[in-house]
Length: 253
Image (cartoon, rainbow, N blue to C red):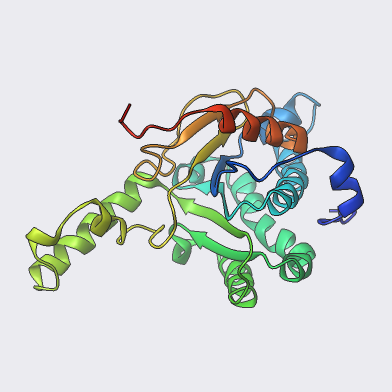
């Protein structure tokens, strides 16, 4: 990245959008789709789109902080993404270190806490250590929780949760009578987190792509054709304004 984009420029932010805290979703999850197509449309290698996508992350974390969102979960790398060419996978998995090296001081200064979900142990050492360093450095912050989903797949998460739960039953740590949705949720990567209020997916596709399948049961969905590198504060605020107009009944009237 040739230039650092300031995270928290208050003057620029106030001029670029208006927000209200009324009915703002506490937890927003985003499927950041369209990096490769953004680059291809410009005759560039796909990896250029992935790098440009970091700029969008900067913008959206900034506006999420300003809007007092409590949790922002970003789908950065799925278990299915290993199927891509090795060079592209390697490039994507080096981006967390690049992003955190540049922006971690800003995140710390603005009370952002970093968390990660997914099969982190099977990531390359350089990715795993960069993420763990950020988690450790921001552990005491109590502002926006920025959760990075890395090597994450929801079916794998649910299957592993079931295995752990069955093991606890077999070892008499848990009885069948105690099993319910709340108890099961404690075995997921997202244990202790609220479920997303709003899911945003960029890039024009309208599917979940194995992302938070259990957690999204009552989440509001918002899809846009805008490719992730072009996703702006304005688009984010559009999603929030539409969310505020919806009535969430959770099966009731």
